[in-house]
Image (cartoon, rainbow, N blue to C red; front, side, top):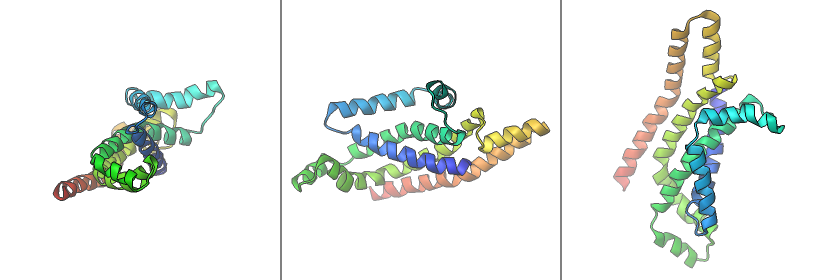
Length: 198
């Protein structure tokens, strides 16, 4: 379940990150305010609290989500805020003349973003985006706190049944390392390549 939640959570966080990252650079102040509210609220509240709200709080509003959906929404929305800042910084790193040139070719703001600005910004954003993917995989471990079927939950359950907490957590740590280390290495290589290109 950890991999599935990670993949779907990453897809959600990328969608939210691109949307709110673009809103954060929009000319209309209202869009920028929406971006700041989302980013500041999510970044300044712990992921555990957000997961608990989705799992324990929403049922009081008549909304009951399966643990799997709680995991995907939790890590997706949480990391979406960080990706929004990465995307915003990537967009702002592109010279303003690029946007003006797109306008002169008849593009709207959103068209210019889609066809001109974002394709250039994504190269700048790749290394930090890969780091966010690593963090997202590690953060799926919070699902264990709401009985999610992730690696950490299974380690807790096995350790409780067999009273071997040390070995259970060592093996779980190694499994997370096997997932995250290749991505982290890839991010460092991308960063070095980008430095050479720039």
